[in-house]
Amino acid sequence: MTSPRIAYGGFFAYGGHDAADSVLITFSIPPGKRLGKHVDTLEETQYFVSGHGVLIRDSGAVPVKQGDLVVLAVGEAHDLHNTGSEDLRVIGFFSGPKVEQHWDLERWGGDTPAVTGSPS
Image (cartoon, rainbow, N blue to C red):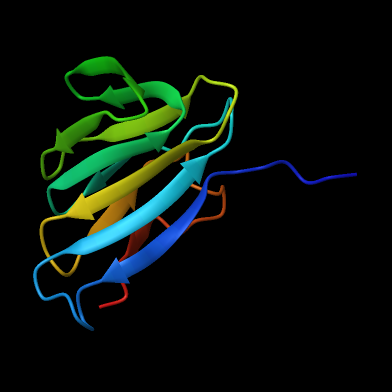
């Protein structure tokens, strides 16, 4: 029996070592799965490396696909749903060296704490 695939990722690079003004994360969402609704304490720019899905944000849902770039305001609730047949792979760039994500009830990975953040 195989365990179900969930969204995965982590703080690939972050302020505190060589970066003083930014945080970069990378994550992937398997087909049919969601990242989980949350807000960030910094502005986030998301670049979609592969796949396609729906970005659900305060202002409404918009389709996203490989090559798209979106900017999310500080405090804007958002979620990503992979509607494709391959992993939805994303790189997120944050506008400062310390960021927190405040998760709703449906959280990334299911057992993720209510607040996650960069290690710096």
